[in-house]
Image 1 (cartoon, rainbow over the protein chains, first blue to last red):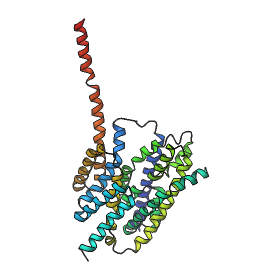
Image 2: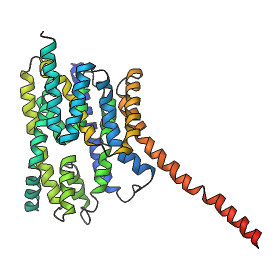
Image 3: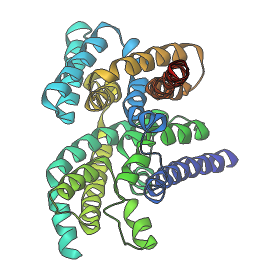
Length: 107
Length: 247
């Protein structure tokens, strides 16, 4: 019972906290628009951050994914770069991994 | 206003199709991780940010690492500060209530569609809101449909569902590429993340890799501006000393 309650509470806190964090950034950006530095170090930091964050998220996963995963990630990246189509790139990567597993370990 | 909203919703429909499909993958992962239908819907309506939701679902294992999760979401969504700031001209003269209401439904996609329309003189806050409502609807439909399907999948690894996270973020990362100036920060970010993931607990590698990589150009620009200041000093001194000599 107490376990169930604490689990429920942690779910509410996780979703609520994530919602509050995201909303603060959305509205904060608009309200602080006049005060955010328009150039210099902070501006360049903020402009570089989206790319480096996404890369940092995925790099360890690719690094430890083995040959099949690494190859599929490379194909996903190439497809995303050439076509600019997120969905297609994602499907290509997943299809390579699924096919590879079908061929190499028929468990 | 209603007309503007309808126009915005229609303009976002093409990108909405891929948002729904991408959402269905998130729904499948969420079902595998044990999130209920209602929890996923609550997340869609309150957080409404695709990449952050993917990370939350990826981290979803009891006991939930609540603080780490919120921190990860905060870092991933840091870009919304810039997105929000860039919308300032569009919101010129609007009330705080309007700002506070509409900003919640700003996602990467309707922001991009609105900015493109704004450049051609055809965007208003209603257009932005209509796009947001359209995207939030298709995002919820996609994720919930995926959730229904995901509960039926017995061997998720056979469909490479465990690879979906890597595939999504690899493609998203590539879409952020801006040119050669990204090489050094990206290599730094990747190296820091791989090393930090190996030696530190939890998801600290996201923060360390992301911030470490982005600090590089920031430090560079601080260093460059100092360098520009420096030569003036000896030059001035030199000119003055020359001036004194010629006198």
